[in-house]
Structures are given as structure tokens and as C-alpha cells.
Length: 85
Image 1 (tube, rainbow, N blue to C red):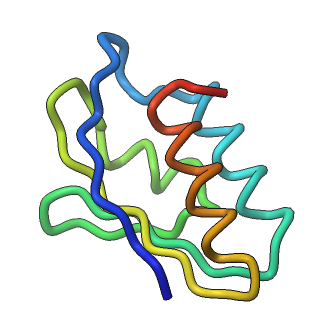
Image 2 (image 1 turned 180 degrees about the horizontal axis):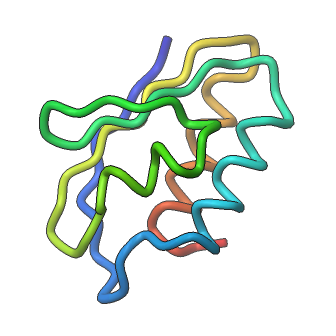
């Protein structure tokens, strides 16, 4: 299990387009992913649940990955979250 907490720095909230990219990346693997903001934790493969987090600039978000490709997947998901893909 690996996890990383990052500060969301984009001026635009984490909206449906990057959320779709995020969930598609999760669905390509056998790893389980959760995303946490404040006290709310949601599965990383459910777009509507990720929308519930209402991630905006200045929020701290933790991504936790558990599975065979966890380190590489975590790196890709952080890039997507921060707008690098």
C-alpha cells in the first residue's frame, strides 16, 4: 500500500473531464484506489463519488493505492490530479 497527499493547485476545480481520465486509469489495473479529502473517502474508480469531494484550489487530497502496480499507478494518478495529463 502506498499513499500520497498533495495540494490541489489548479484554478479550475477537479471536474468531470479529468475525473474521467482518473477513473479510466484506475479501471485499467487490478489495484484498489481511494481518494480522501478532509474526512470523506471515496473509491477512485467511481466518477460520481469523486465529484462529491468538490476538490478546489488549496484542498489537500490523499490518494491511496493498493495492488501489484501501486507505485506506478500512484504516480500517474497524482499527475492527472494535478493537471499534468
